[in-house]
Image 1 (cartoon, helix red, strand yellow):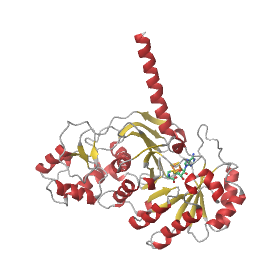
Image 2: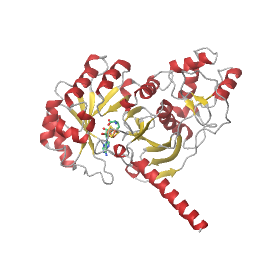
Image 3: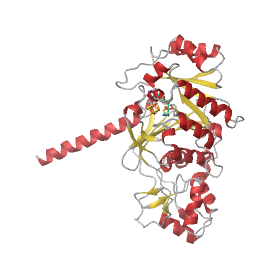
Image 4: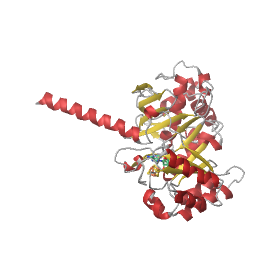
Length: 417
Ligand code: SAH
Ligand code: SF4
């Protein structure tokens, strides 16, 4: 497999003249560069409030949401069912600005990765993984980031090693999906001008909040973004096709069950507290008994028709959590919790201190779980040529940027000498 395109992309939105924003104080989503209100990532209710605040009818929210998400339109002039007056007003006061793509890689097998530079210069990444048998309209899963870095410091995670920088806004979270879909529309051009909008059908079918960060620690923007993923006016994804992955922020799992109906994945990685405290430190705050109780609540107590199971993620670390004994403990731990288990071969990175379990070990572990009656899958690695665990591509791009900065400095020093 080889990389077919690696390049540095230009921002999708031209920088516009600074125009004083007329804004409602309750609307906090501002595009700093333009001092305009960024409508990307606003929920239907927020957008309706925005229209009211500029003296317009709230139903405009539905029209604009359809243009942004279903047609991929960012230029208000192209929103032809709005009056000329409203289009001018929006152009002066608002914008639809996704995060800036600074690096992208497309693999032969259809895997795509983007590195975004978000406000303040931080980098986050997004990965699109097509199913093995993905035909033109097959399953395409987007792995979306929710934070820059992560505070939870799981011992095997490259994002955790970077520490926490900041939360992403809803525009920055949903913007990752917007850009991935736009990449199908534009057929890898940098501009949306003159594209065939029917290509929009060829878009992302599944979203997993499994990129950088802990989504439940950036709760509001993540839930708002997922609302738009589910909304029929926006992306209209089925609730089975939007998955939130958490390392176990227990109080927020109860809140999530109240607020939105999406699929839940739990990053378990260990079947007992002693080992989990070591691998997933948040376990010291919310130990396994509390985590499993919160998962049962999510499955059973809220909308039992739809939440049939949780996905249990379990990274396979050689000699650490992959013994037969661990599989047996897992069977006992998960008793009474409808779950599917996803074994993830550890994705190594420099100085991690861990190795990937052998394929034989992973299969032996999987067999114990299957024999106990669990549906157990082993995650395939895709796009090997551009593969890296979430967070690693950002590291590489940042390294390159740092190297380039050092190189430029050395030239400047030489010039000045
Ligand atoms: N913070 C959330 C979501 C992001 S991490 C969570 O922890 O669930 C997404 C998944 O990737 C988690 O299951 C995480 O444990 C796993 N992961 C992190 N680093 C990994 C690595 N080096 N190899 C394989 N899986 C990894
Ligand atoms: Fe954070 Fe998830 Fe990585 Fe743990 S595995 S450090 S929670 S991103």
